[in-house]
Length: 557
Image 1: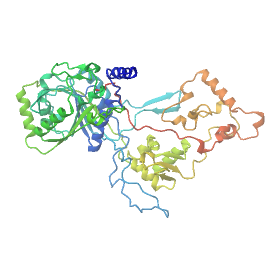
Image 2 (image 1 turned 90 degrees about the vertical axis):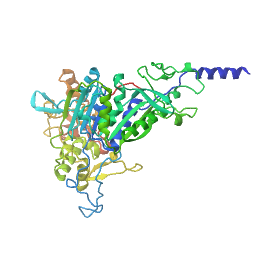
Image 3 (image 1 turned 30 degrees about the vertical axis):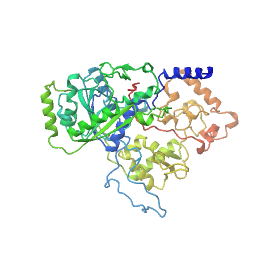
Image 4 (image 1 turned 180 degrees about the vertical axis):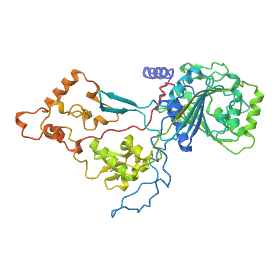
């Protein structure tokens, strides 16, 4: 063997003795949550129970209000025929739904159950209604504004956080629409190609109540949908090369010592292979009258150089149970639970939150009034073109529409003031990209400075807020009303701010000079950069509608 071959083999041997790099994007816990939310969207779930909710990360997400209501009924917004016109020129009409590519979730009731008081403290806080808007007062009645970072809520939401064990029946949970149990750990034994349950664990639950899991959830509560996720032991082979020695795996040996498996995290008491999980799902689905579909989530960014990606699947096994017709299911579950003679201490209701809808939800104003408000906003921002969703997140417009974005679309389509542009060159027809164009562009902007020749400091209107430097992209017109809430120089009354403002005004020829005493003293005539064409002013900003996600966990289980 040549020296070169020996060197290469040594290098390869060193590589095999190391764990492979495996990363996830989005992070694995987010991919599990995305899967849960996607199923809920597809099934139009409105009532949810999170078993083993922990700190309530999923519940907190579900508490965020949907940006708009589901499409309005026909008596609110009649469907127009394709050839409907309001003038000699035909105007295309939209369908009855907006943003159908990614439907929103509209929960009305959510509940969480756990036994950890410390975790539930966070769940109670994370699901509480937001604080009311803060009224900011500065010096006089002329300065009054309302500040809020919360979008309006268009639907009532009822939230209950319970403390207690799974082995106790809670009558509030019976026949609920959807139950979620994320990251399940279990003990199992394989015998004659069947899975015999020895113990079953959900995080934070005591060992003696494991046998009650399926009878309580699928028997007594019998939800329409049951969603479950659990770590996949099959995927763990992805962390090492096929020919790697056992020492290459740097995980955590099975703490029960029932197997020689190495798990991903120290808190895992068991990790099922794909076949073990599928077999267990099939057994309990048959026993309790459900049909089940098993799959996986969590594919790594890196491509496996040995081509094992399809074989190993995702890092988490997931399953959707759908209820079928079955007689006596609830009675059977209660009988099993009674025979187990477990704890009967009732659950404790730690919090009952009521998130109330906006008082104008479902009460739209006339299309003409909405159209005039849209025109007013576009002129205020000096924007001849705005995305539909930018206009929607101006709260006063959304309130006039009663929470229905379809009403806004119809107001634009029915008005001669606007043109609704649904598709751009080289773009696919995504409703999130729809724009509203103001016919004729933006009218003459508001004159902030006196026309009487006095351009001194005393003539600054009380409602004017500086946008900053003329050459700054953040200082354009509309910056004072930007969604980011940047009030720049209006944040303090210090002398340094006043000196900066005077220096800025002198640099821009704000003060009156001998050369311009005969010229008009309006804004556009005294400050050169105000003469820029509207087309050179950038859009007022992209608005994220993703909603808040409060889970900062680094868990990759």
